Image: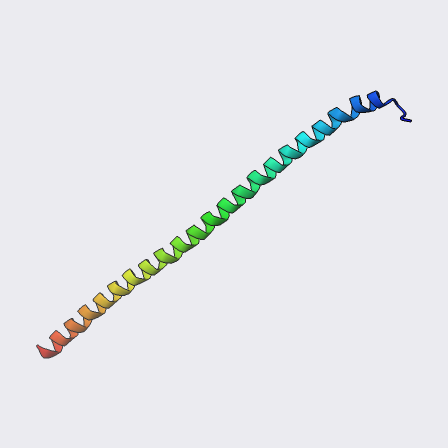
Length: 84
């Protein structure tokens, strides 16, 4: 025995079940999108950090080369003055 009648229960429950499942699908879709965005941002951050390291190395090498060139010029100038 059902109280209220079985038909009334079905009329009430079926729409609720469908709404609940539809809402769950929307939440799953939203969570999936957020997960994909987080993964993409994480990869972008990793790539930016690698690029920063590479650019830092290039900058330091260029700076070191400029310093070496200046030192060579100073030493050459000092040697020319002491020989002259």
